[in-house]
Length: 125
Image (cartoon, rainbow, N blue to C red; front, side):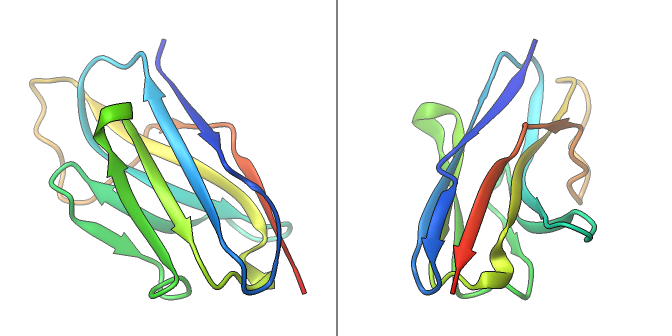
């Protein structure tokens, strides 16, 4: 049974940084890409950033220039380096992945079908 395991969340003061990691294991199939989403109380879950299997990345406007997503192929993981954190970045951050059968071609846009449990990021002023 496949799983995504996030780590690296925590508390930091505004202006500081954190690095999140998400390790994928136990999956069978073609990994089209992985992503980070976040959800804060009273708000809908939103895309933070994603990275496709070809290395193409996407960022939410609110994090551009501050967050960097990357692949850690040696550990079958993705990383999210978060710098210049703001109080509004406080949320539960979820790792997600789209895994499809090997005979399926990955779609142009990612649509995650696997999710991690989430890790809390708290930014204080």
